[in-house]
Amino acid sequence: MAGSKVFYSDMQVNMDRPLLVKFLNLLKRSDLSQIDFKDRFVAVKTHFGEYGNLASLRPNWARVLCDYIKELGGRPFLTDCNTLYIGGRKNALDHLSTANFNGYCEITTGVHNIIADGLKGNDEVEVPVEGGEYVQKAKVGRALMDADIIISLSHFKGHEMAGFGGSLKNIGMGGGSRAGKMEMHSNEKPVVDPKLCIGCGRCHRICAHDAPTLVGKVMHIDHNKCVGCGRCISVCPRDAISAPLDATSAVMNCKIAEYTKAIIWGRPHYHISLAIDITPNCDCHADNAPPIVPNVGMFASADPVAIDVACADMVNKQAPIPGSVLADSKVTEGDHFHKIGPNTDWRSCIEHAQKLGLGTAEYELVKVN
Image: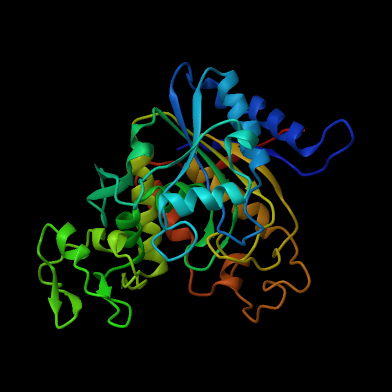
């Protein structure tokens, strides 16, 4: 497969060309306009940022992108799915409140926010994964599958489990419902914390397989009956049910690639990544460590594999910022992402995505001034 074009613009500005002007110019110079947006629903998959995280993308970037999509005739909306973990985005109400707090609302972005997997994270569509080795049917947020076009707007940064988070992770992990995220994160089935359980029975009522049963005053999940759908996690009022985060980095990354294929396969898609405020961990944290390298730039490509590799290559060319976890790392081998996460394996996602036909790691970097 020939190399894919990855359009790139650096962060150098002047009085006549501020960052958002450069960003719009990048979008217009890229091949994004080759997509037929006319009267189509466009899901702009992004990350609204956890409450308290100050490294996640500002809504200004989304405004420029969504305005341009509307100029091309599309009907964009910003979207993400609820989180598996307990935090400020575990249900649609909390998620929307967090998005608003972080500046994502119709006034600032010009479009609506839609939580793709619904109120409790279980409004999902099971999508077959052609060629899937780990996932046969991906559990995807319904609004993502209802859209005509998928656009990824991702914050490129490190990740404590995946190695880094870019386009593939933004779509694959981010597009999974709560049950889908459980499938990617875990090789095990849900368990009940007896200290938190109040024996209300909601998990029993939603289960189609009669797996949760009351033992004394506490629910117990029979793993012989449980199929691992994760619906019990979404309805528990005390967050007493969880899945162990035990999938290895390589296995999780392969599942992310397979979920990405389920979401984008067979319809138009495009990918934008901003390699700025490159923190060592995900924006799902309620705080953020200092960036590991200086801001790199803005990237755009029709190929989710090529753009992730291009971003990684550019980050790895940068010198560590003094005082960051990268500068202080005692790991001497591997690239920047391995040095901050020695147990991670980001290349496993790239290799599996290529195998699935999602794109190529070979790319041509097209500089846009």
